[in-house]
Length: 140
Image 1 (cartoon, rainbow, N blue to C red):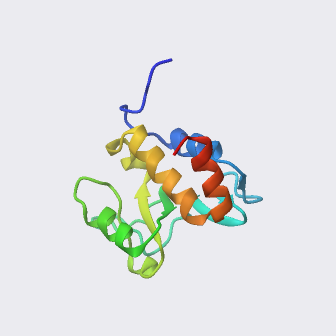
Image 2 (image 1 turned 60 degrees about the vertical axis):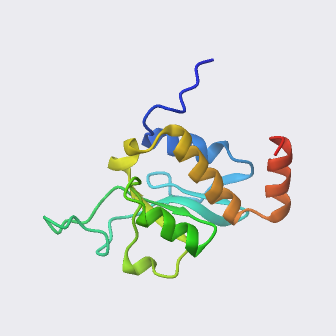
């Protein structure tokens, strides 16, 4: 089997990686813009175009924003302030433990980097017992 972790990440990877986590469900009637949940808590979702995330040149709303939960405010700040990552936030998400990324910029991440971020998002929202079992099953 070929390791494809170094290739650029894609939208399909978001879906595949989120669904690969244990106990994941898709919130009903969100199939076109899925909301991935664990234990009834969202950890990754595809956002509708909103007035707080717009193209600075055209003013048009971004229609490809993905929200990923993070463990802490410090992690959020580290991700959005690192110029090497495509993550960002908006004032609407002040105080919210999540980062935003445009689907059109996912290729700036490797599949492995995206996998780590989605796994971290899942761990930030899953129960302690589920996280412990998942880590144990992975030998961590």
